[in-house]
Image (tube, rainbow, N blue to C red; front, top):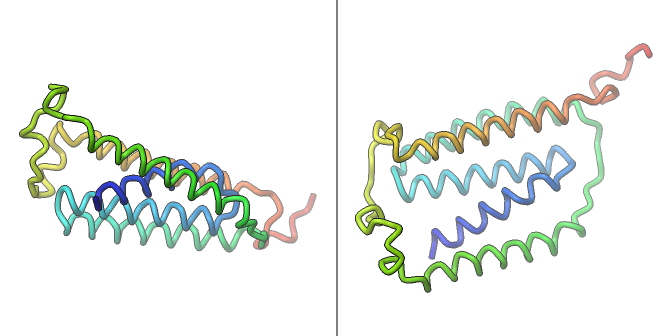
Length: 166
């Protein structure tokens, strides 16, 4: 049930990130997505690996969004638009995950039952071919973070540059 909640919350934040326009709300969404992904990694692999990964991501996010918040002028946030959308998407993902529990996995013969066993692993086994998708996913998250920061910092007129000649 915990994986159901964390998985649906992480998918909710993944799909809400493109809707964010302000750096503060975007940083909050990326921070929550990082926290949820690290909790899922901590549940499935190693709690220390999830904790260290969270500390690395938070350190990078704090540095990036401190610079971004200093460069972007203050913008008022409109919370009313996203309040209902977040709950609708969250309920949809929870229903999607909940319906997976009613499917008989053994009759599908797609998944190996041995793979479903929850085993704790060391961080060296994370680089094995079975878990390369996790590493690629984390690399994509970092790439999206970099693109978002570059997109936000491209403004000509911002707080730190009021004396541009033009």
